[in-house]
Image (cartoon, rainbow, N blue to C red; front, side, top):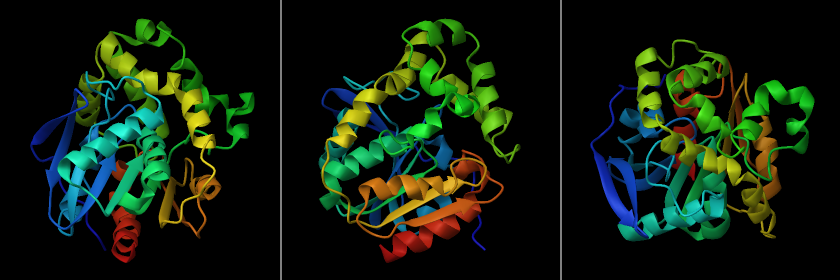
Length: 287
């Protein structure tokens, strides 16, 4: 059985890409692996996986522009952000790499793959409602309890106005309801995320990804080709589950390795890190 590791990240690094500071965490040696987090989180989500991953791979856990930081891209649509990540790869000389991404990070990862498949050995996406790939019926009123935030966060100004000053309470609501393993994300962990998103400007930067959702849908739909690279699509058993594999079929030519992790909500890397590693490590090795 694979054992997950500690709660510590390496020292934060920074590079300037197109005038935008990009923060990241680097560790390990070997084939490069880029990790992309989602909302309302940071690269801290990978803390339990890094001790195992860095034994075999050169890890770059990248902070998405504006996602829990004050360094937004010119636009938060997935193509713009993916091109920043491409420039990050070029700056560091990264190629023939794996990409592993969760939530909004997976939105960006799919956009990256569609434009830069030649750079990738594999793509792994974890529990995400990816623009243009998530089934339209998910957004029906009957499913409002699960997807209401897509609409709320997309409204200009109102979310920041209502949430500023109550960031921890708001994020705690998400973690308590979307996680199945209730002790996986502690109050101290929530403090890390709340600090990253405190203040109207940081809130806005994160919400802008939702505000750019329809543009991201349009961009994905503009690609006529499909991906031939290996894809691992993983959902929490109590969240997206095997729907991740169904969604990725829309952009893949090949068989997708799809998995649903039992007793797991949305936050896979934190709720079930050992089970995720048991899927991820063999997949990366053979890709």
